[in-house]
Amino acid sequence: QQAIGAPDTDNHLRDLLSERTSDADNDLIQKLMVYDPDVSAAVSAYLTLSNTEMRYLVKTPDGVLDSNGITEVAKILNQIGYVSDYSVGFTMPRSIKTRNADLRYMVLKRGSIALEMILDQKFGLTDARNIDTNTFEWYEKKKGFLTPKQKQNNVDVDLNIPTLFYATHRQDPSNAYSKSSFISVINTVYARLQIIGDLYDIMQINGYPRMTIKLMEEVIVKNLPEADRRDEKKRLRFINQVMSDVTRKFGEIKPTQPIVHSDSIEVSTLNTAQGGGSGASIDINPVIDVLNAQNQAALKSVATVLGRGASGVNTASVEAQIFSMQAAEINQPVAEVWSQLLTFALRFSGSQSYVEVYFDKPEMRPPNELEPAYVQRQARLLKDLSLGIISDDEYHLAMYNRPKPPTAPELSGTNFLDATTGKDSAKNDSTANAKTNTPQKDQPNSMQRAQTRKSDKSANSNAVK
Image (cartoon, rainbow, N blue to C red; front, side, top):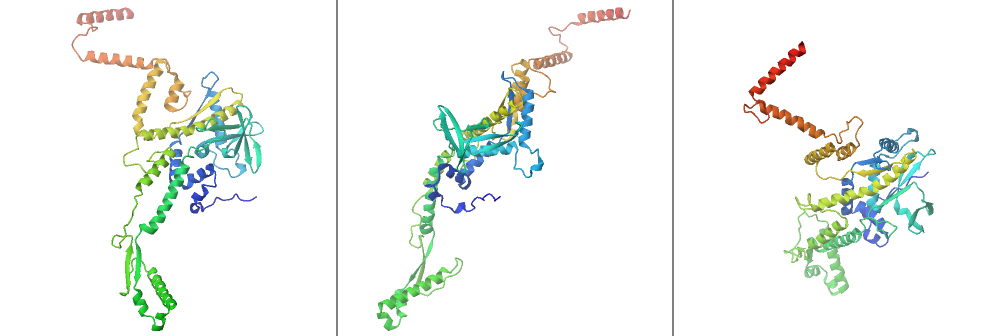
């Protein structure tokens, strides 16, 4: 009956350096993904590039496409992706695209994901819950077999159930607990924060010009009565009072206001060549460059994503290709849990088929640049389809990411390309022969054509008779 506690809104004012010694690495990654510019930029780039369309196939145990199974899986996804009972009130977003975005975020934050099937009394799939794997505790009650329990409000919830599906992303095989792939950035981020904080302090003291005011003590003492000049305490008290007065008055002066003073005061600036200062005495650029390089390496990202790429560089290079492949790897555990969950849901309908879920590959190039590659691939696949090397379903999956529709004709192994080429070549040959007066090798001469016409007339007359 109470509202869920809202997250703190003053985290940007907290001292992250002090929390480094007290918080766990998973909790630190969760904060850095939101508040650190480099980590949040890398997370955003990974999520944007890996946000591709989800595809699925249903195959029989023999590896043949199951059309009925594909229809059944489409119904299951539609059931859990859209609200069917509007009498329950408000419902959070349930679309498959939204669920996949949440799962990818958990892969980056935890290094693993878990989905739990929610069934009704008739074993119908009603929902798929995303569970935070950071709450898992693993047990090895049998050698080589791990089972999880969830810590929830100091209560152990046994998750040794067949409706829980789990997948990891590049986990250490010798460790039961997964970690985010960004763990290695923690030290470099906090080293960078420490150095930047120190540089801020140095800049406040030495980096900026500061006003200095010099008071002539002889002039101040001359304004004292003769009796007070001999008293050391009264003389110091009067000098301090004058200095406080001058400090207060000059402290209220704005940078654009003129300064008017008597010749008993000398005004100058520190940290400048005119004021006798040396200015900046340390070059911090090499230090910052090293820290930036370490952050980039720890985040498995490229300089362009973090806003440090030079103009025209790193946008179509090997680095960008590797980064695109790494973003595609995030979809692998997501596809794994969906494959297991949908296969289990399909078995409730009596089918023995299994589901293969996959995602489109991330592509950085715009669609208009990919069109020539698509045309070349279509020509190659059409040739294989004509020769029967691939089936109609394989062709449609490669070109359109879906099986062959029922209205499409069966073309595999029909040699339709050779037939079309033969007709076209015959047509071209007849056209060429009509345009030339030179007899060809297989072209009949005039006497042969006359005999042919004569025989044709005789045949027609006999037919009429």
